[in-house]
Image (cartoon, rainbow, N blue to C red; front, side, top):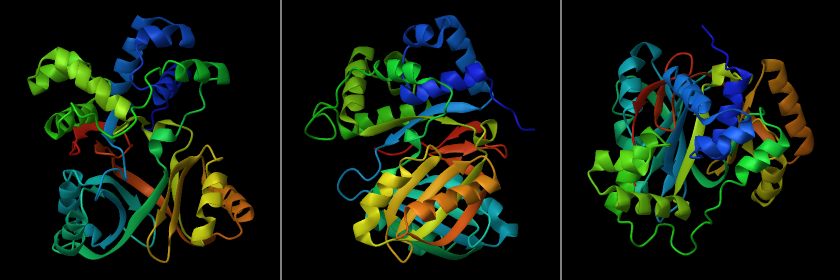
Length: 339
């Protein structure tokens, strides 16, 4: 049964999309309620699996980092074991069941080309239900889901919440010198499970002094080496349909088309890829007629763009490490990313 979020719940989620770790006392006057009410509301939302806050290493950062989209065709009758394995694989960030042309679309993040090659050339073909794969390596990530917003707050509220972010990015290296790789992995692992976890909560899990974790956590968040993201169950919004367009576009036109698609509030993902389909755009839309209207808009605004193929997502099994149920709600099972 489809569950719809209330306006007050949507407003809170929208606020946390802007500032995932904002204190309830900061948000309460902007959302015209109390801190206690917001805490209870968020607890109810997360218990129902309708929204969650996660974290992951910033895509395409660091030497040797690889992001890829892998199309998989498989025997549907034998995919249960495959899906279970992929869901528990931390390299596989997201899993979507596609309507045509491919059975699964995987978003994969690895720390090296060798790691990606092992998955594509050995592990996936070795599974009995996999018939074929097609890999598109990301050469530039232009937009991803952490930038997508609900439309529940007015302009003044959004600006006030954005202004709460007062810690400037740290210049220089992506990760502070005082933060070792071991500690960084531990912090990201705990933030992946709960992006609002306090330093004290994290310290109790990783067995380190709370004061040290507080300092190291602040350094990690300042560095922008990790992305914080408030996600929402898609079926509980007014945009229940995901459409992905696989496109061909002259390389010289990529920047111009990125600026065009970035004006659409429906945009969830945009990246440049290797191969004949070298540009990918994915959006959340309210209905299939809206899908056609957006595609018509895209074709008229970007005449140099050739849409090679399109696919509608039938179901999302996993999104940025979080397993989802058949209604797109978080189950609570999370595969933590590495460092």
